[in-house]
Length: 319
Image 1 (cartoon, helix red, strand yellow):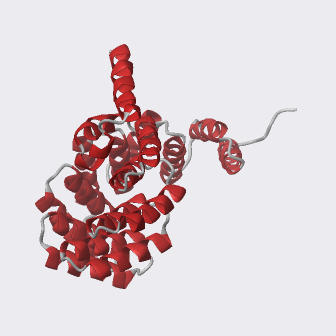
Image 2 (cartoon, rainbow, N blue to C red):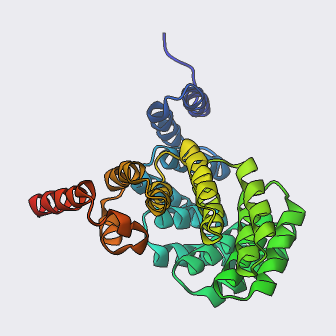
């Protein structure tokens, strides 16, 4: 018996199959059936939607080249699709091509001048490549378009802090916290600013607030411990670092700072244990270890010498 399914029916069935496979986490099959659906004629808007779905799925699967192709197919169908240009930019950014990413983010904003997320990532890239004034310009643009963007305010404050303009940094981060008091990075950055302003009690208060919201952000523990180290409260610093390690067992710099603290207290056994862990996690710390004055109590310790010599041997083998 012949099938009476129309092309429309076949297309629709493939779309339904693709959606069901995606919901069941069979992403490869979902893509396969979306492509099958495209083999049958349909409305242009639906084609765009299918291609967006394909691009999103490839992105989720980390198949970035395939995602890029899907986004570029969208642009061929409709050169005014700002979302596709934005998608292309995100892929290039993930591929480490900042220049191409900027090019396509800007194309997205040319089509849609109110595309605040595109401006956000333009600012972010400029910040990462060291063009701070450009980053400031575009974070301000984000804020013009989205008045309550607490992350943009925070990032802007962070740039001002790096530029040592602590008053502007304070105002931006303060605004971020006013908008969203649960954003741990803004609380962390306020701690950084207070530390630079030598308001140590307030700095610790904000590091504690950041830790309370996110114990898996190791820099809050690190920066808090540094304040105690500078105050000569070495045991207190060790407590902070130990708590940080509990929640961040792969943060090598927490182990390193704790090793330095133990060395200052002549707790050489504990210091050596931490340094061994550091070298396993990040062998490049060896160069710092060899000249760090905080570890001078260990320079003549056979175990310390053995760590250094073993690293040298392993390094020679690799070469």
